[in-house]
Length: 130
Image 1 (tube, rainbow, N blue to C red):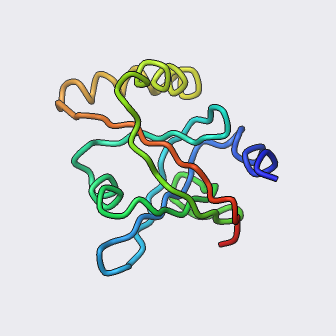
Image 2: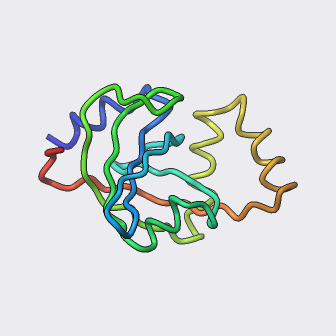
């Protein structure tokens, strides 16, 4: 069952990541992602709102979306986990391969703006309901 879920993500560029504020309000953000071994990985500025919300509550919802965050399929519940820095090169190379035209430019921007990226993984719950 899980394999079928990931098959729908392989050729997509964005997921709508839904994180939760302390008051329970949902905040939706479209993010780039890559897949490896039935896990979805995304990266973000360590000081971003979504990362702060995940530090407080790592329960998330995710669905395929377009660049504007418009959901294009089923929404799945899951957990977001911070990845160890030892995996950064491996995961970043997947981003470079998938987003080959834009990734090098973003690396320069991140460096110039001194953005500290973190990489997080999403593991979907075994109960795949909305």
